[in-house]
Image (cartoon, rainbow, N blue to C red; front, side, top):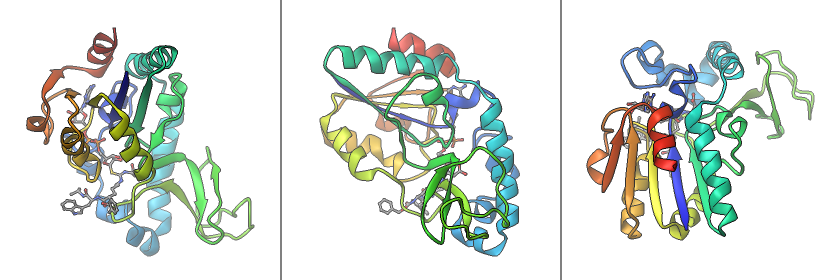
Length: 228
Ligand code: BV8
């Protein structure tokens, strides 16, 4: 059996990482148009760096929770039976990997990587970035940016995601509000492919009506319960 799982900020909420669109979430305190766009970076790179430096520190201090670990167990179990868990995340943190998962598709990039706008080299990056940071590959300063996908940029791994959906027998979305496209459209794509669809979230998401079944509650309880 192959399962396609899409995760969002809700799966990392109980690890202490803030979600985006809930009351008190990141985007209620920061304006995405000012911070998570190429235009924002061009206008004020130092401000954008400060936002991501803070979040990078938060990710480094966080630990995976029972939901991340349950998905990693499921991935190993399916592989042992000749199946696959396609694990696609909108999250820029590395908690799936630290929870034991492999081959995670980070469709919105990774905050613990940096990319040089001059030579395009991407490299693991755990420290703060600034406009003075030189690229470790080409030595140029001023072009290093977080290796994440901003609004208006094309998400990553879209071909692998489409192939994974087409090969899967079940689609499950976990901890995502269904507000950001193209990820919010995966449930509709899965249904067109004839897959059963299941939502796991704290509350019904924006796309809740598109799912066949659902389980609501904190991910550290609902995800292990679904996996077992
Ligand atoms: C693109 C990375 C073209 C950086 C992020 C108008 C209509 C339709 C679309 C558009 C439109 N205008 C513009 C667009 C496109 C735009 C878009 O969707 N905008 C929206 C806002 C309208 N999309 C883009 O620009 C994308 N690119 O479309 O390119 C294209 C596409 C395909 C093919 C070719 C070309 C790029 C979008 C990427 C943006 N980058 N982040 C960073 O992190 O700083 S977005 C950001 O939102 C997050 O990082 C995350 O990746 C994403 C999704 O958020 P969620 O993960 O869902 O989080 P959220 O807070 O919303 O929800 C949390 C949920 O968890 C809640 O439901 C809550 O109930 C639940 N929860 C809370 N606690 C728990 C819990 N669940 C369980 N347990 C708990 N304990």
